[in-house]
Image 1 (cartoon, rainbow, N blue to C red):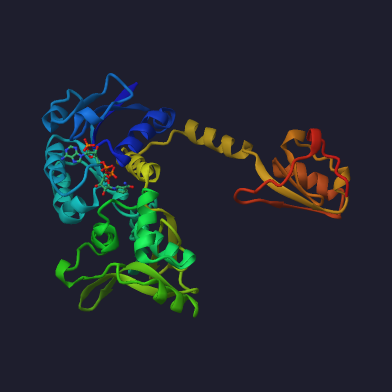
Image 2: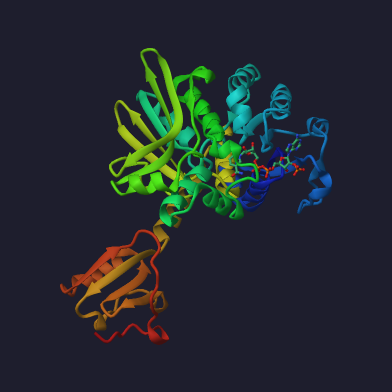
Length: 410
Ligand SMILES: NC(=O)c1ccc[n+]([C@@H]2O[C@H](COP(=O)([O-])OP(=O)(O)OC[C@H]3O[C@@H](n4cnc5c(N)ncnc54)[C@H](OP(=O)(O)O)[C@@H]3O)[C@@H](O)[C@H]2O)c1
């Protein structure tokens, strides 16, 4: 079997997430690509701080060692800052490697140059992880851009700021106390400037602008304001009239060029960003054919970001999903048990054709059971007093039937 060799630049939050994800998903890679995927080397700054779980992976502080690897197909960039990342990725592209980056600062500055270089060397660049972590916003935009024209984009692109604003409102905290909490929980750096002053969101907005409009606005023309001047009093005042502060990056193409702002705004209940709370990110996209689409999810973190990197990786390799794989997936989906709520009079005679241990009592008149729809459809058909509903999401179990028996007193 073929092996695809990857070098990982950086072994911090993102690097470790990518390493583990690749290691733990070999069967998926094999099914999708017909190849094994191997991390061949990891680049760090302070070698003494790191220990890799696998002995055969090279750990180095010297990028030349990476370039000298006998087999190298993809370089994943999970280091910090424009340099040396830009220099390293240029060298990797020139060597004929595909590159994937999570480094938004570098990509906002040099994305255009890297893309041109990659085209010249016929390799690809993945950068999904640079914007909104685990949310597939770049893929979504690329899919929409075929016939739709995107007219406006509004996004909560920094989870730390959103967390701080949420906590200030929900727990009546000052900015300083909410920031301290974010730091204690690991959501904010010791130096939070990039997050709370909107610099991180600015880089992400520039990358989005490049994707959506093919160019960035003049950086000096962008209105950038952080959240440091938002007080608990202002938050309270506005939430009293149904408005919430959100730190929003807004991109719009006007007749005079691209208009971009990154600033705190007041959002009402009718806007898709109103419900986006805590460290979540979200992007609201207005396009001329489809209308408004809003996507929300984890904007940072070890595995959400690793998810974006490995999905980019699969796209680079243009997956040929084998018929065998697709059939196996279909069978798996068909066989997967679904949760159902069964409710109504007469639960005492519940005799659906499902394993007894899959039935839980939530309430004397409410059972939670898992199985395939036919089991419940046949059962309920015989008794018009009963109804069943499919359950989306997790259900908090309040109790269990004794001895897994399903005879319930009503
Ligand atoms: N954290 C997230 O949730 C997230 C989400 C999306 C995107 N990103 C982006 O992903 C990148 C990595 O973020 P992170 O949170 O994983 O950072 P991190 O935890 O600080 O880790 C950075 C890693 O890069 C290494 N490194 C830094 N500069 C280097 C250099 N000049 N040469 C070699 N290695 C170097 C560090 O090595 P040492 O440990 O030896 O110092 C460390 O292993 C950043 O560009 C960030 O903006 C992060």
